[in-house]
Image (cartoon, rainbow, N blue to C red):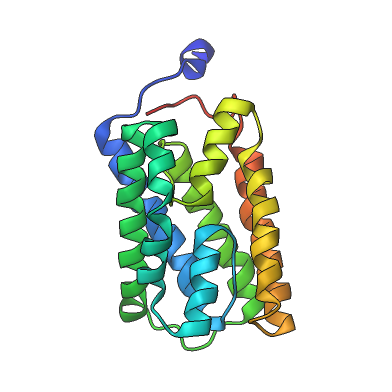
Length: 205
């Protein structure tokens, strides 16, 4: 029994598709929490949120556009299978994030709750995608590439990049919102760092 559980097994196509759907929905719901109270996060999602606050352009359009240059790295370094799934996931997050406000009315949410729960949702969504060889683009692609090829933990790398993006938030958001954003980023990245590492999960796509 133990041997069977420890033997890697390939994910089926339905399993990959289900993980992509659930993962992108979790990420999008976390983004909706953040957007409602004007919080920031890391990676391309955080950059898209900051640009949304500064320009008024919808997050979905910004997120999709910012990720376009990263697809080249995905195709060249991670393979077409990973790249195609990532493109689909980015498209789903762009769509879901624009539709969730029409599906769910969020009229009052405390920024501390939004940061902790939103960060947890985004982290769990990213973890689901990572385990099925997909991502939500941008820094996620680079983080996965560095972990799989150089052993650099994806979550810790993202934490460093996120710190730089959150530093930029000081110039756009009120101080308390930056503080809450940092808490959310810590939750998000620790979920990925503690759970996405060699030997923790044996399934593969």
